[in-house]
Length: 119
Length: 205
Image 1 (tube, rainbow over the protein chains, first blue to last red):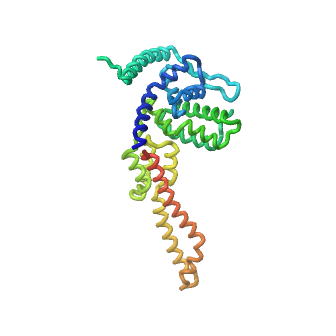
Image 2: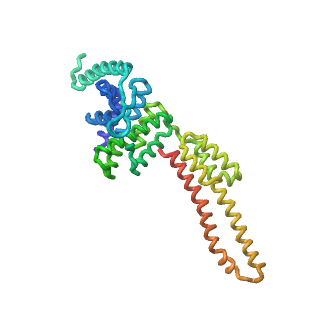
Image 3: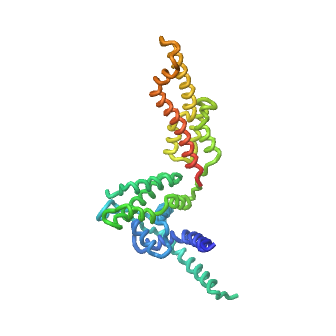
C-alpha cells in the first residue's frame, strides 16, 4: 500500500517521459552533434530523464530511420571511430513544432495544477 | 580496437542480441554495436582498468536487455511474436512425436520449430540437434538394449558351460552395460531438457 501510489505515479511519468524523450534528444543535438555515449550522459545528467541508458539507442536508430537525425563516423583520438548524430532540417522542424505545443501544454497543466482556472 | 572482452560484457551483449531477436537485423546490429561502444566507453571512464564491480554497475546503468528490447519493439512498432499452439505442438512432437509416429512425428515437430518466429536460430539448432528423434531414440535404443542383454543370456548358455549362472554373464557385461545405461539416461534427459528449454524460451512472460 505504501509503495503502490509512488509506483503508479512513476509509471505515469515513464509514459510521459517516453513521449517527450525523442524531442529532448533532438533539442540536445540542435546545439551540437554528439556521439551516443555523450548524448546519453547529457540526458541522464538531467534529473529523471533517463533511467535505463540503453533504451536511448533504439530511439536513436528510430530517429535516424525517420530522417530526423543523421549520423556519420568520425575518428576519435582514442579508441575506435564514433558514430556522431546530427539533427536534420526535418528534425529541426519537428522539434520546433513540438516546442510550441509543449509550451502551451505545460502552461495549461501548470494553470490547472495551481487552481487558477477561470470559467 | 578497444572492444570490451570481459566475460560479463560478452554475456550481456549476447543476452541483448537474443532479447532483440524480433527486431530486424540491421537495426538490431546497430543497437548492439552502439551499446557495445557505450559499455566500452563507460567502463573505461569508470577506471583505467575495469574490474568486476565497475563493469557490473555500468551494465546496471545500461539496463536489462529485456527492457531495451521492449523499448526497441515499441519504437519500431513490432508486436512481440507470441507463442501459441504451433509452439506447443512443436515441443510436444519433438519430444514424443517420433515415438507415436516413428520418424515422421519428430520431423513435423522440427518443421514447426523452424517455421515458428518465436525462437532464435540458436534455439532452433538446439531443438533440432538435441536430440534428433527426441525420446524416440531412447525408446528404440531401449528395445535394442533389452534385445542384446537377452542374447547375452543365450550366448552364456551356448558357450560350452551350460548352466552357467546368469550372474557371470551379467558380470562380464557390467562394464559396457553401465555405459549403455548412461547413454540411455542421457537420451531421455537431454530431450526432456531441450523441451523444457524451448518451452521456457517460448512461453516465459
